[in-house]
Structures are given as C-alpha cells and as structure tokens.
Length: 232
Image (cartoon, helix red, strand yellow):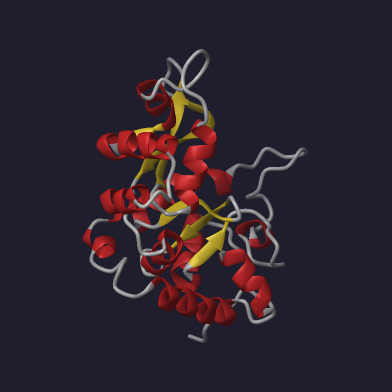
C-alpha cells in the first residue's frame, strides 16, 4: 500500500478509519489549525461532525474508544489544540516538548511553577482520574485554588499529562448524556514501558528533527517553517 499523506483525498467515516489514520500518520489533530488539511475536521465524512443544523456527534463519541483501543496519546498538544498522537511517535514528541526533563527535574531547575507542580503531583498520585474529582481533591473552584485550566493545559503541552479516556454522565435509566468528561493520566502510567523505555532515548534536538522530517512526509504541501512553528 502506498504511503498516505494529508494531501490525499480521503475521508474518515468510522472509528476504525480514524484508528487507521492515527496509525498511518502518527498525528491527527482534531480541529482545523494553521496547516490547511491537517485535521480530522477537514477529512471527516458527512454526517459525522456536529454543526448548528444537525446533531451528529460521531467524531466526539469515538474519542474515548479510540484512545483506549489504540493506547495512543490525546491532549492539547499543538498550539493548545487537541490532537491524537500514536504510541510510536509520542515518545519523540514528549522528549522534545519536555526538553529531556522529567517533571521533578524540571521543577528542581526552576522551569515549572509551584502551581503546576502541585497539580502534577496530585494527578500523578491518583491517575487515571476524571477532571471533576481531580478539581475536588485539589480544592479548585469557587473560594479555593485558582488556575486549574492554565496548569492542566500547560502540562499537556509539555507532555507530562494526557487525556486517557472520556466518560459520560448517565441518567437514572443508565443513558449517557452531555459532553464527554476528560479522564487525565500521565504517559508513564497510561502508555507504560513502551513509553518509559524510549522517551529519553534521543536528545531533544534529535527528536525534534525526526519530527520535522516525518511532518514533511505527511504534509507535503506545507512549508518547513509552518511545520516548525506548529511543533514549537
């Protein structure tokens, strides 16, 4: 089978097709971004994407099952927008974003705030954990600690935290409703040895150049400057 790129004419109309895309490309952003054509949103089949006139939620409902079945990483990785990253490519991406640091070393070198440290330690000790109980444990909310959204987004961008599932609230009849609630974990906990044995195998610079080469293959119409900007 020929190597696929995001410049090819294809649509994703099922959970299985999304899994194949993540496997083939390594990176599948959920929403449109600075690089045209590089998203699930732009390749989704008709009837699978929510809009104001229709009530189709397939792309949202696939999230949890895809993450769980593939054991891939999901989170706000690319300019604070959500993306799927395969287990094959996430170690290089995390190594680059972490700049080779585990979180404790980052904090010890003064590169992480006390607020981020407190949230990371709480999450790490209780992973996997849904956002609501995590906030409750950390006393985030009215009259309590502030800054949850900023810290959890920063920890995802730095690849110390990922979303490992989405859970839905249920009514008294057991029917699911509403938006999926994020369940957070760490890559070390969710991906295990496949991640921990490889994340620091290269220098951060080597990982970054490896990522750039891969992005140039899957995004043949994108300029290298645009790729480097998206990855940073």
